[in-house]
Image (tube, rainbow, N blue to C red):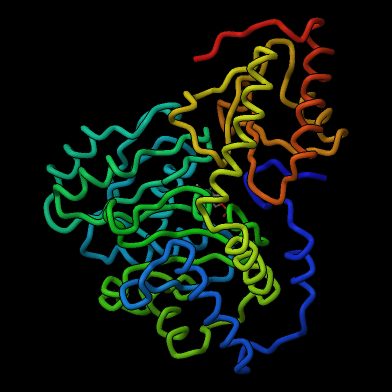
Length: 370
Ligand SMILES: *Cc1c(COP(=O)(O)O)cnc(C)c1O
């Protein structure tokens, strides 16, 4: 089965094999070495200076990393502005509310880009220290939010960004120094091609040093994890097989040419599929210029409901993904993350062509895009 959902991804053989490495106690020096190699390797993906940045490993899914970042790095006297244009932006707000953070959402509809004027107004209107949290790649629609533009507004107000880069880390450019970033949350099982269970936050050391420990959460206490990991240990029992897989996945990424090569690979696959679907009259839900290379959303063609499309593709060996919320009736999503071979994409396109031809009679009926 080839997974075209936005994580977990189809594993390469070498990453799958890495899961079965020796049993390991996390209080032994071998674990400390593994943890240190991972922390260094994660900074290395974007060539970050370890003197300025710290990568903090967590056992959990991507949301654990986002929640650790927000609950730890927005102290009680700081207000938070969240940018919402999809499920994951709205989740930032929900996480903030769960931790009783004073949060002001800047909301737009899911198919739109973040409202920079409203962000500027919100920043101007709030007294005292403020942080801004935003999603880089909004997986709800496949929109790549223009973080340079968001960052420029933040910079004018002297505010740093907390970024959910869960579905972009390893596949898209991240402007750690430019946006300007205080911390980025991500996971091992999306663009890095590891397995679920190993998540991480990359934060400025200056920011972590000023962060109280414990803060609002004990398990997701980022500063506490950072201190334990800097001392060569770990606060709690880590998901060691997921760490093994992440180490192998990082080695594979580096050998393949790092994130820029992965970006080009994703782009080639995504564009191949877009062109093939466009030839069948199936159009992207958001303009390609605004879309990531990681995941694309497409209008469901008339006469074909999501369940039928999903089940027929699954019978052909592919798992695609539904739209969320109100989009479930309107679109389907295809991610190009994971160990996807050229032959997989050719078989996927052939399966789409067969299914679409069966539905529409000609396979050439056109449908209006947005
Ligand atoms: C996948 C994802 C998450 C985290 O989801 P988990 O199910 O917790 O791994 C968070 N943000 C974005 C943008 C995502 O795509």
